[in-house]
Image (cartoon, rainbow, N blue to C red; front, side, top):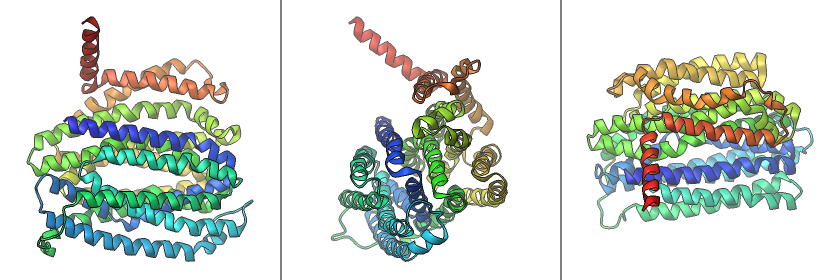
Length: 504
């Protein structure tokens, strides 16, 4: 348990730092580059996500096999053979993807992006430069997954903080020196991505046992892993489509400047997902090991314990976005009109991301079992329902419709599909889990915000609203901790221990 606490703590520290520098540098980027050039950054983020289609769950499978090797379930030869196979596949696909993006860059700049102030040549070169950056970051994800499978989250978190500093903070003087030229931004990102890949490659190599004097694994020994890959591949492809198709449509229908503001709103809302990531990163290897060792009761307890921990982490932040979406956007952009226009989008994406994070725990159990069949079916149903809803919503309501569709689809996912799957893998009811571990925490987290109802806090100065949002976020977090059956005893023990030391 100490290891999992250390891993979660390290994950949160690194994720908090990465989230802080990425969000706090947003005003500098939008000011130095302008909304239109920042729209290219949003387009780059979307391309990076779409590039994950090529992953097709392969990196997740490698992480799972590393966890199984760590628990003694598989031989070193199997892990080595799978790693070699996946590195070959990733390398070929990365080269093809980067080359294809470079060849299509001019067509994208003229036929897809709605450029107003930038030249077509600038936009095309930026798109071409995105290719190597996206490919290198994708290659890094495979090495990172292997390291995470070995439960080396402390090391991964430290590197993430270092790379985030290089990627977001050190980039600002370069943009300033080149007068906000987006070409300078994307050229610099190639250098940072190359550095990240080299470091991860060296670390991953140090963890995997040497192949010298070892008999190579037969392909038949890889069948369980490859079967899991085939299931995760399908769900991963669908999930990328689900989470990125709205950005793809809006990158075409909006001007690049408006897409820049949309990107700011979506990026802030993604902070909810970032709060969930440190826990999921630590829990996946733990639950996989618990299932491999036959500790099913421990697995069920982990599901409840850590889903409650996620609730404490994300529900106060969600309440902040519900009540302070305008104030947060205004603080980041300084543009009142755009903050009014895009604050409902921030709110809806924030709520949708929160619901998605809570729903994701049912996948973690299937991941641990090595059986993602139900997850595959659920994602397929989600896709067939969500795409028509998204098309209708965007057609009639634009970016706001896309945000509403995302929120509504995740409400349906949590309340309809998760209960259906829940009983097949866990020995306690969905309603018991929802009530004890989610709703009680959520109700407590919402209480401080009712004090705001009589006041028109939207009229506060630019950074005054952000300060008030921070204060109420902290109050909400404390209320959520006190309502949590997992964290309340831990807080009580900590305080008693601290007071007893003072008395001595």
